[in-house]
Image 1 (cartoon, one colour):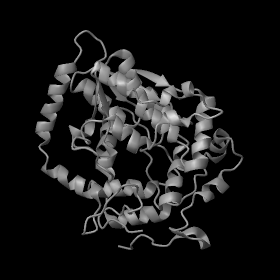
Image 2: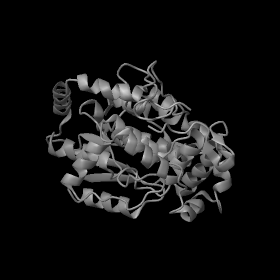
Image 3: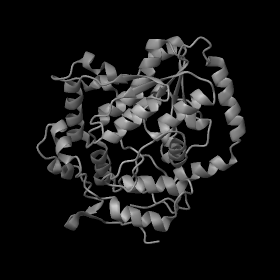
Length: 363
C-alpha cells in the first residue's frame, strides 16, 4: 500500500491514481476547484432551472434523497433558492436507523413530497446475502437501486430533470470516462463503474428476470422522453462538511451518538448495514470509513494530517458490533465473522493480529 502524500487515501482504492509527486487525483481535483468560476456555474444552474421550472405546481425535477445532509441540502436549495418543485425519490435503507428515520421526517415536515421504494424484501435479502458471499458487499443490489430508482421516477412522471449529488469518481479519486462525466450522468458509467455489471444478469433459480425491475436503469425511457441527469456538485462548490453545516443551520438535523468504524456521526447514519459495508472495505482494501472521512476532510481543508492520523488509528479497523445480531439476521447467517475473514486481502495484512503490512505514515 502507498498513501497519498496529502490526504492519506491509499492506492488500493479502486480506480484511484497517483501523480509522480505521490498525490492522488482526488486531491488534484479539489485543487482544480479553486480555478473554477463558480459564479458562472451558478448562472448555468439558473438557466437550467429556468428551462424546466414548473408554473402550475407540477414537479419539475427529481432529487435522489436519503434524508441525509447532502441530498437534503440539494433539495432545500433547489426549492428555496431556485424556485423549483422537486419530487424526492427515496430508496429505503436495508435496516433503517432511528436517527435516519427522524431526519427524514423532520425534513419532510419542511414541505416536501417524496416517493419511497422498499422492494420485495425476499428478493432484496437474498441478493444482499448473495453479494455479501460472492463480493463481500451486502449493499450491491441496494447501490443499484439507488442509481436506478430516481431515474425510474423521472420516467414514470415525465419529469425532465434529475439532480444526483456529486460525481464520486471525480471528487474522491477514480476513472473519468468522458469530459462531461462530472456534470452529467450517462448509462455507460452507471453500468461500468457504479454497478460494475448489468442487474439483468443477476437472475438464477431463485430470482427471476421480473424480480430485478427495481434495479434496472431506464436508459431507453430517459432518452425517449428527453430526460437528463446532472450532478449538483458541478454547479456549486461541493463538500460534505459544508452540507452538514447547512443542514444544522436550516433544520433540526440530528447526529448519531456512535458509529462503528469512525468518529463521524453525521455521514451515512441511516442504515444499520453501513458499518459492515465499510468494515468490508477495510478488510478488502485496507481502509475503512474513518480513513475515508478523514481523507475527504483533509482534501477540503477541514482537518490536518496529524489529527486525521489519530482518528484513523483509533477507529478504522473497529468491528461493527452495535447492530451485529440484527445484520446477521437480515443476511440469514447466525454469525458473519467467518465470511468477513474469507474476504480479507491477505496481501495487505499480516496474519498475526491482522495488522497492515504497510501502515499509515506517522506524520
